[in-house]
Length: 284
Image (tube, rainbow, N blue to C red; front, side, top):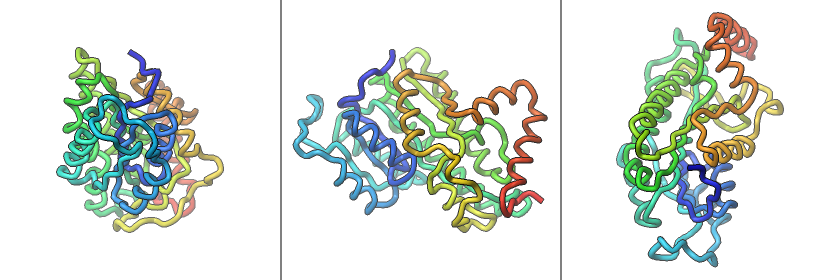
């Protein structure tokens, strides 16, 4: 059943303090949802909640006590207890969960030859295990509401992206996990969507890890040609509304999905050529 109205729906968004996560918080709040914004930065979350919350708004009938439109929860998704506490606080405040968006993520830029294995492990901890922990503890509530789970993946989760081994691996793992959750819940009315933005103008590229785990601090790509975080957020919301399975947002994603089936060897060469052209490319 499609979700046409988000008013008074309870939405959890991880990685909510910047980029796509912050844009999602703003979009859902504008649509009248009760948003639980989770991230590591208490300062950014508090500022966002103060800006967007409306104290005069009447709480939903199911909410026992008046609460804010934005509930900030400081959480590091690499910690299982933090993820459990995030879900517990949501239920304590609102009594239900309608949508869980696993958006928290980090990237990397280094060839496997040079990358320390700890860098790959960090990518898996945030991108994959952060999704697993949140879904695990939110699942019974989402089953009860016949709600939606969204994993914010990437084109790198459709085909291996050279110079981003840990990133591609973590996004592939997220996709496999969520697809299995979907199949397990076929009879329970649960919606699961994998969203695959292309390169997006957010700070995730500035914080991408290099071979030794330090942030690269700059982006090798032209920002003006990328999708904005706000556009990605709007497309994700549209995908949730229509309960899509896979959300490909632009030509690059759709072409990757098509060529993966038609000519994977050609796709290998195209990806290599594109990444090799980047300034200071890790491909040698």
